Image (tube, rainbow, N blue to C red; front, side, top):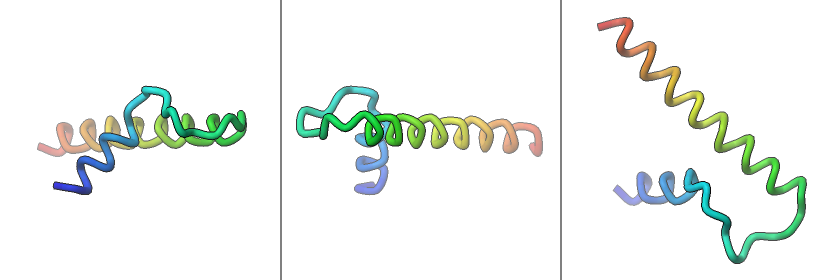
Length: 51
C-alpha cells in the first residue's frame, strides 16, 4: 500500500515546494510522469483487448 502512495504522490502534477529550479530536472520529471501515464493507458488497452 505504501508503494501505491509513493507512486501517486510522484504522479501528482502539483509543483513541489522543495523542488530545485533547474529547468532540465523539471522537464525530466515531466517526461517521466508522461511516460508512466502512457504505459498505464497502454496496459489498460492490452488487458481490455485480451479479455
